[in-house]
Length: 65
Image: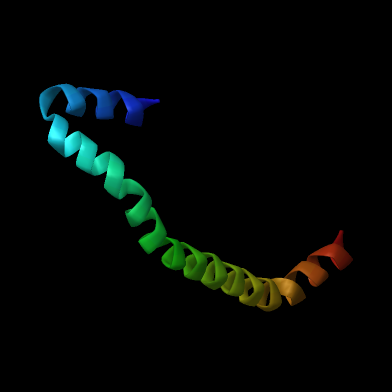
């Protein structure tokens, strides 16, 4: 909602820039999409490594409880 209100203010102040931002937003989103996917994959891999590293400590903790 805040983004829309900021865009409306930009539309009032400088309408060509607002329309350019409106038209370029999908293109920028498509360009950044592979980086989001890479970030998701790297995050998942790091979580897997963290789970493998901490597994012995969690097993030991479960045996003590």
